[in-house]
Image (cartoon, rainbow, N blue to C red; front, side, top):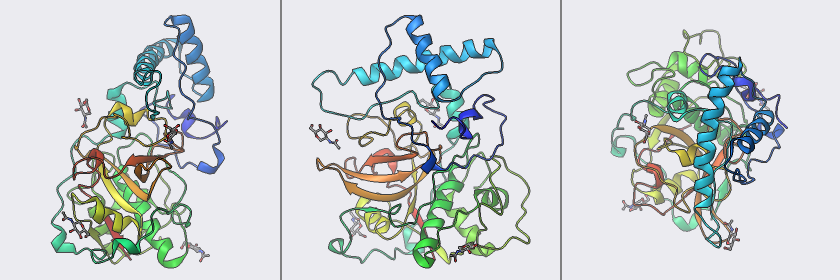
Amino acid sequence: MASSSPDSKRLTKPFSLATLLVMVSCCTHFALAAREVPAAGNDKAMRERYEKWMAEHGRTYKNSAEKARRFEIFKSNAHFIDSYNAAAGPGAKSRPGLTTNNFADLTEAEFNNIYIRRRSLPRPPSVVETGFMYGNVCLSHIPASIDWREKGAVTPVKDQGSCGCCWAFSAVAAVEGIHQIKTQNLTSLSEQQLMDCSTGANNRGCNLGDMNEAFRHIVHSGGLTTEEAYGYEAKQSTCRSSGKQAAAKIRGFQYVPPLNETALLLAVAHQPVSIALDGNNTAFRFFDGTGIFGAADEQCTTELNHAVTAVGYGTDENGSKYWLMKNSWGSRWADMGYVKIARDVASNTGLCGLAMQASYPVA
Ligand SMILES: *[C@@H]1O[C@H](CO)[C@@H](O)[C@H](O)[C@H]1NC(C)=O
Ligand SMILES: *[C@@H]1O[C@H](CO)[C@@H](O)[C@H](O)[C@H]1NC(C)=O
Ligand SMILES: *[C@@H]1O[C@H](CO)[C@@H](O)[C@H](O)[C@H]1NC(C)=O
Ligand SMILES: *[C@@H]1O[C@H](CO)[C@@H](O)[C@H](O)[C@H]1NC(C)=O
């Protein structure tokens, strides 16, 4: 079990931690996919389940009052998860489920406060201004599926911790990707440098941010240094770029034409792409990572409040099309930190708005 992983202890003090939370996904072979067994409806069974969950997640609390409080929150989340999973009913089409993952003892408000941006992203300028270099690629010339992890262009899943800076993680993963594709050198790059140094109109550390402003900053500052040289602190500090060597440079960035999953496909076929979407819903938060999110009736809106990175696409054995997304909620979330999201199913916004504001760095 991964009880020694940094994020297993993180939530013992949910709001004050500034620990280094980089996860090494290859060390975490626990199975999150097992469906929850519905509790017998009494507190004793629920308490046993809670103790088991605490042990699994290496969770401890500062005192018994805090534990009692967290138990009530866990219970309420577990009830929601059980009834969600039970709603499929016997004989229902197989579908993804939810699980009491590492967020199960947080209230929705606490979770949102940490992981979800308080405001929507700023609207980007039009694609016409940046161009779309993959616009003339023939669909027949791109692979039927791609997983940039297999091509060595994706670093292990990271954990943004108690800081709403998904924008930095999304931008960095896209830069790591194009850097590896151009140089064959996969290097983990610094989100903290963006947090501290990319502080324009839209980028405000843990509170708000924009991947495109981050790309612009990387262009003008001459590149990003490594995670190793400028480690993650989960809080904004003063910019300490001087003397730090750039490990990856980009020349610019482009927007994927919005409201067009075909255009997004052409882009992701060539490199990992930064994606804004709605991550503020219970199904996404507790998604157990089996199957494809959105293949059943998981609900989300097109309110863009979270950012991830598209690192692939494909079609499962039953013909369901998906996007492969890398998140920054640690490797205990969903499928080792990744999620497959249904592709070409929603209106032109893409499911959860994923096709509304995608962009990628140009190296
Ligand atoms: C998240 O969703 C909840 C419930 O739908 C809503 O009350 C809240 O305002 C949302 N927060 C953000 C940041 O979108
Ligand atoms: C979507 O993007 C593709 C590729 O750039 C383009 O050929 C197609 O015309 C676009 N569709 C719409 C509706 O704009
Ligand atoms: C890859 O890039 C890193 C950071 O610039 C550098 O330290 C390392 O030597 C490079 N590796 C190779 C094999 O070139
Ligand atoms: C494909 O469909 C079969 C039959 O409904 C189901 O058992 C299986 O789990 C499905 N596979 C995936 C990957 O969803």
